[in-house]
Image (cartoon, rainbow, N blue to C red):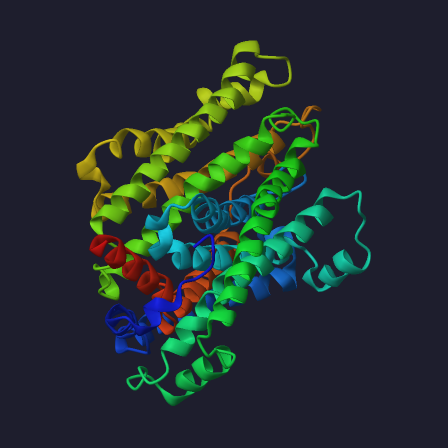
Length: 448
């Protein structure tokens, strides 16, 4: 595709077959309504707990003077991390020319959009006075890393939305006349969003160039989004955060949990929408190898992050290192290390474990361990300040998330699940025109 898009696929028999397969599960089914109803009820309950927090203040959370960042900021870092997978799969693999990743390119962008969008929401939840959010934009200071973070997260969300929507336009036009099984309002939505697409070679040429520009632009922005997030910690001289390793440490960890998130969505899309023909066993095998690769890279940066301070045991680093390795945080620390890094590397080296169900289970463990990892990055450092903790209540010294805090965090996960569910079920989740083009090229190469 480096010379543009060959429109021969528009006259091929493959287009009709692929379009029928991918568009068949699109629409509103009874199972989808039940699932969305369940998520809506859960979200309403979480909204109520957020209202309670707004009325009573952050005192209803477990955060206090010492641990002033807790589950909320940990989840924010996790959301930002998971969103980076869109750049990895659509941009890096796409620009390199790995065509095997085409069927999951849109899934990766859906994951990126969902997590990047709600990364901003969890920050609002963390604010004691959310009505003051506009002040960040009105009076933001360029010297503030928080201002940098808001800028790169917003830019990344916009670029991810464009990389999701632009390749979708031809598919929306292809869907015309094939959507009789869907409600009228959805057909009209397709008609509007297709932007009067006519499938002309000129249109495809402009589309391809636009996508390529955004694929290039999103790479430095994606690296910046998690590098800047790491700087929110690393620019602080606290033991545990004072590290020059944090940038690549965060980025490599982001790829691990992002790929795991894509595998989870792949599994449910494959089974619930009956798309086994496109989300093949061979594709799962390749994505499993990709998870092993990024986990090995992440393991290297983990060794740098903990082996060096663990060897030196400097005065202010020693208490935190001891608590992580053998103290009160040891259980969750070693779970995060083994569950989020060692487990996928060891198990996914075996071909039998790179099947859909084993990969789903491994990815769920990796995702949970990745979230715990972010909690470990935030809490222990804050709980070990330079000055001794004196003349304060014991509850201020130990961070324990409250029910309200947990419910608000779950609410953000629920919104992500709703975004992903809507985009997966109401729009083509596999790129129709790209798959048809690839299939046509393969047949022509075979004939020659």
